[in-house]
Length: 209
Image (cartoon, rainbow, N blue to C red; front, side, top):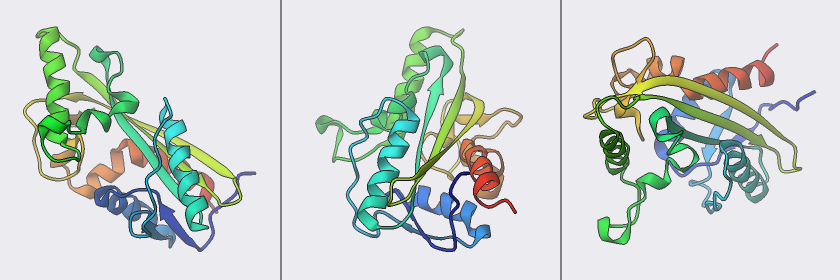
């Protein structure tokens, strides 16, 4: 039987305030107190995995071992059909600025532009279908772990629309809607997102009566 989280503090293995807020909102109904790895001053481990599962486990294990608390890590990304699934596990890397592009950090508008540029290069008939993947990994300090995977399908639009959300949200239109993730109220996005899909599986196993 999979180990369950108790009434304890859970470290969210992220330095991203937007991701912490979104994950915290999803866990709030279950009385879980969330703190970020960033607020604890924990270093960010190198994400050397070639899959979402591998990278999520790398982050969760590092945070659990460094903090002595159970940790939850999220690894997610955008895959584009016409680009053979890219950027995929390298989604965040496409947003990393090079030395000639400005100060170090991530520029998500630049990343969205790279995706759009590659689609335009393929021509007007390029398949703009895509999907977001999310893997949630829980790790305990003693080495036990659990993994949950989610997915949300959609299409890419251009130019970016909306001011809510983060990452590639302004160009992702989920199936069944005409608005981008960034145009949806956070509660609406939480109900249909790839992260919500993974969380539903986590909740079913971790918090079901």
